[in-house]
Image 1 (cartoon, one colour):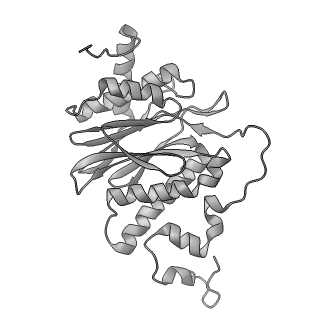
Image 2 (tube, one colour):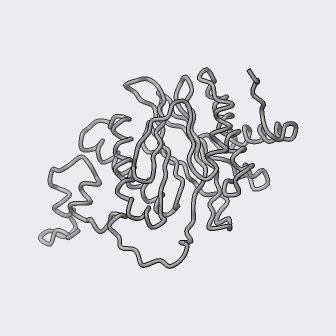
Image 3 (cartoon, helix red, strand yellow):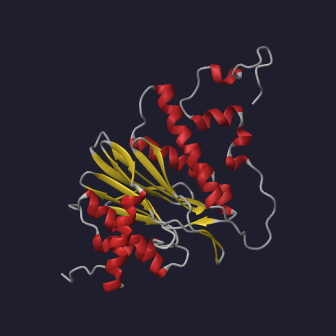
Length: 281
């Protein structure tokens, strides 16, 4: 973006003109080369080695919704990092968890945060939860070219809908297709195992404390059967990241809070390695 050559030290002229409430539209008009989907990729021969994030889970309860993710990132069969952060606040009432190519996913989340903040500053009000979900879908759709080359991003979006007074969960495919999930959802390589666990344990009448335990149980089950998903690391004190979103806003559980839940789940697994058992009928 060209600087204002007539008055050095001031913002470029593009910042001073009224325009769209979308930050993505602003970038597309004034600095399209900065958008991830507009960057050219070198030709790739053979499998592409990149750091990948894995399992993200979400579950709703009477007072809102919980979004959580494990901490492992892998590159092929190698554990690239044990303490990656995959769950981020999008704004005051929503959060997004990422699975897929880590570098692209983190960049997409930062752009999404800017998109929501830009809208709020321009319009003077918060975008509806439905609108936030649609904006994220458009951004994922814009990454389709990279996804086709193996750099896919598959987020899970959750937030508290102030208009409907309840928590809502949205999942996406790599082409930006959006689906609202009922009750719970999971994405990533361990999502099949996490979903089975959530299906067994989730109930609409659970409290906030109980639903946090449920998502940690689901991540534990995912780590049990998927090598790319990390379980609670009691030795290194690395635990899942858990965000709770209610009508009061978003809150990340403290290290002390989540360690207490993770240790309780681990103690339970010493007695029942397969986890809590649901009644047959």
